[in-house]
Image (tube, rainbow, N blue to C red):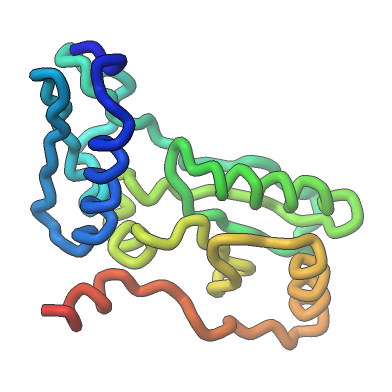
Length: 179
């Protein structure tokens, strides 16, 4: 199939439809343009069942991005966990902010790929809200991060006054309430 044969407007309209119907677990759309069909996977609402780079059918399943980004040698340094998936550009921006303050605010950064098979619990909570950050095991922030937020949170960690703010994503609970 040639992607160049797809017209932008039908593709855009179908993506909007997919976003509106995002709560539908069995969402499956097909874009039709010039006789070509492009099946849309269920990855928008369900994690992949296996992690491979490229299948023989031509469909691309994302590789895991779980692992350590960097570690700080100090045991007392805050530990940040980024809940993400491959291709998340907002997650890249969050990592850039954290890296930019690393010298002034030492910390460790690990990332958890919510689409990994063994991370279904995190996928159910955060599938619509990545990036999500935890600080020393507690929910911290979602979507965006500024350098001043890092400084404030790390000072609170050092003083022992850090508490999770309200607004932690809970996608599965919201979906259950809609039923």
